[in-house]
Length: 334
Image (tube, rainbow, N blue to C red):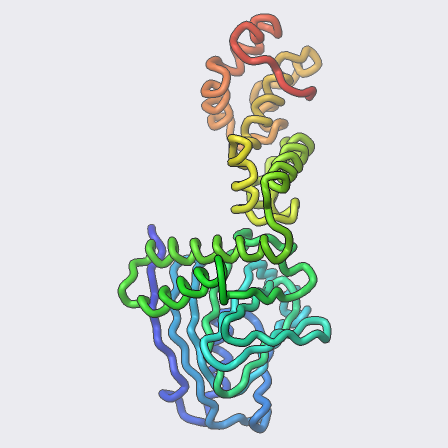
């Protein structure tokens, strides 16, 4: 069943003053997970009269929050990181006023025209004044490279080029919140994230043709080494290589394949090599499929026939010579 698209306005103005701080912290935690809060302008024990509001758009793992509130500091601590294992990211885009993100004692101002990317898998602080208003775009795990925030938050320029396009699309996505369907919201959010990925490439080292080739070669070497692992997926491969899934897909597209196709082809080649190898005669066809990284015998059989035009049992029965004449040489040693 398709995820439901939710658009909701929330304000502390509908809550008694004495309950507003608690209401706000619960609301923000629902949207963004575990955080600590500090209300610098008020009594920390009872910040009565706190004012804040949000417009939330949400569908599946994609979310855009437009918020404004009194001055506040949010802190994502190492304890929070250990506690919930959230590996998504947040892109903070100021609409008015200014934000400051901090990590490891270093504070980075984020004025209008810039954006800050932070990882929920690393501690950080977000501080803003009473007149700040901003959008917060959730970036699902695997959509952007971990290396972009490996040393703390990244501040991106949205004033020109691809960054300006990303900023405009974010504003439009928020403005048209009630006119969108769920699939449209998800698709546009994904496009914004892709544009942010391009901005990051310019900031942290562009993926030029030579760089794409290097990523593709690294992916092939990684798959050669790890293809037998049934838990290896395109997403985990990208994470281990330090790239986003989309960047890995782009690199392999230039090489004429995809992460899933590369992984499946290598597993099939290894399985065929083992079927032809007398040392594996004592292992059943199913055992070879599982040893080669397949989690389903039926899926293995279907993929094998599609790639080689014959069945695993036929290859085993025919032997290496007949298998070579069937159209594909065995690749790689078992």
